[in-house]
Length: 568
Image (cartoon, rainbow, N blue to C red; front, side, top):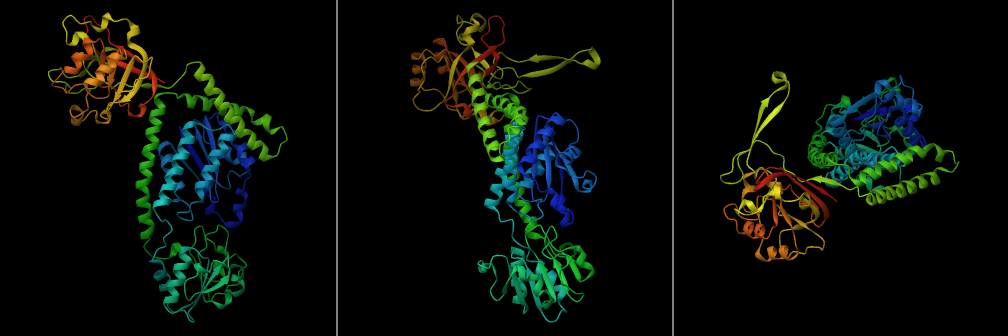
């Protein structure tokens, strides 16, 4: 199970947020401690400028309190700002968070590097898992795509008129805009265009291009000294601290608008001026709504890619995943001994990275030496369906016995010998041809290669089987799957015979059109068994693999459904 427990500390008053500043060593130590205490498979601590989160896979129990204890955060004091997400909800939250959709500074992109940094530290601590690393990587990829295609920081044109309704009776019409954000620039330009005398602060006096024409540029550090000259003050910075703190020299005659999120005006000023927050202004946030809607489309596409990867990983333990888990376990166990060496943080971090890389390569080498590889199931699942081939019986899976009624479950199977993924024997077309039950088991295992079914065939030496990627695999289960697929040429079949190939497989219905069988006859006459309706093998093109084809054993079998495994 995937869980995230977090604290949105940006919602608290500014002076209280300083407790959430952590060194990398603190975060690494916290991850190791949380992994040990929760017996989790993996842990990532994400510390940003506005929130603190612990992500875990397979943890036992709620990690909010353990996270607080590990990082010295008062448990009860911050409970009101806590939140949690699980599994699919957590995945959706992370993708949106990475894109800046949940950030106080809507659409900001610094969260991307912070997520990348958290992923790196988790791996250095030996607390990473393939699933969590892939999830974080996918969220970052989605965020980069969103920021590349969309401008999330377009200010709302409806905001200045909303401010104007509050200040229409103010005189003289003088305004100080604190900050140089897109919102600040828009407000300054709007009011200057409506006859106001406007000044805008700049942190970097060299960036005068940020100041709209006709607006006076003043130094950010000068803001408090000149506040008294302006009856209207608009604060719209992009920082997380207060631009106007509780000691700012304001009076009851002044109107102060706090447009930042989180607020950058100390709430204590409300007792000494007319303070108006963004949430008190009535205006449509059309640009934000549009940005969120457009972002969702890109996010959903990236989420689909992540879930597709996760489904593939769930089917088998890849050699890479096994080695990665072993390397991470070594780093996790070495955390204490490495910390006791007394080396500076830079050297420790560098050594951890080198150790992880060397351990990974060593484990991969050993797994290869032991013959452990990636196993892929290339079988189409048998399901109730009409016959694929003319005159064949339909596949029917009929519940025959039930636990509640009969004490056990039992299914009655009705199908032909050429249902689903199946193997054709010479007996299929020739009365005196061999049936599958007459072949030794060794005939159904061997070295194979996956090739495209186009052009001249380049078949490596010492290969007994060939799987052909026709491009028809994704059409399985549709009417389009039944026709139009490519078939073998005479030259290609001659090459198969010349190379001594003993079995050919196709991720389409047949090496022939369904109403013709010349290629069947040629191949079976030359004792080349034919494997049909293999799962899509496009992604395996060019790979050498060990193929195991296990046909159902029955007498005089002209063909039989099979289970197909590829190891590479």
